[in-house]
Length: 335
Image (cartoon, rainbow, N blue to C red; front, side, top):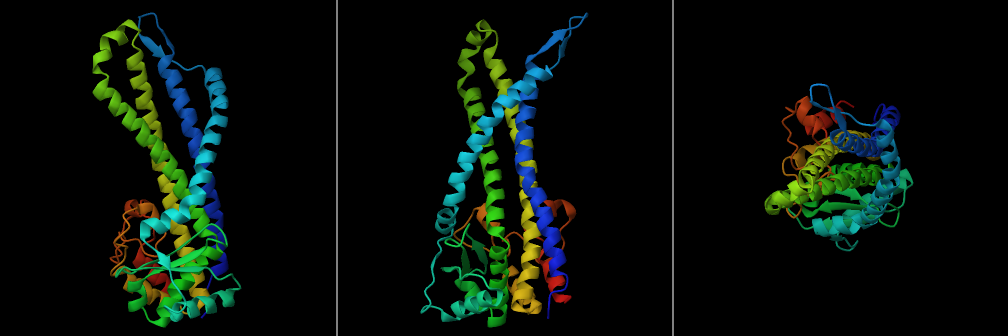
């Protein structure tokens, strides 16, 4: 049975994902501008007739500082991004304990993958397996040489052929739609901001713990220590704002791509009910025992923290990498 509305869903999700992806550099640059503005605003001003300090910011100074900062920010983030982007495959494999699966070890999986790739006219990806009794699967990679479908031994043991075909079709759809590259990009952007925030927080904590003895010197130097503390606080606030909005954007992209992979996987295997049945089984024991990283768990077909209860509300869904599993099953079973 053909999955009704697949093309419409693909176009809509692709458009929304592109808009969300554009949000990452927009948020990053806005927070840089906000930081410069706040520091300028707090450091500048004048005293009114009653002797009260009135803060103000010279927008020409703010604009000039922002223009000067942009090349450094873009360059630093670009170098960081490239290193993380091309090292992600090794990182994912190391964190999950995945290993290559040989054809002679499990010809069943190879036959399913080969049949599906020939059906959709795509190259055969690598196949990895994780020795874990829990049920899960994910796709990874940034190009033909690194595209990989990874499954757990628990998944292979519990699912029948039709269900396993549905799961693999779902993961192949992620690769066909370049979701792996898109999700890795979103993860790296959030990781950059999170790391910067941790650095600022550690510097601030170190200053509070070990900077107490320099108070008298700070007074002599015109309160430079207090000024640095203010700058640190402003930096943490700006990083917190950036982290919140980039995280929400990352989660929104992930949810969109999961719905799209369900639709494409159902169309590819031709059996939406089998994929729905597989999701129901996986949701009973999802996860990977060796992996405690949420950025890696975002790639899984079912996030370990997502339940089958169907009771998620709007607020909790905003902070979820995956749509509600019950809703995914409902959509698959209606066709």
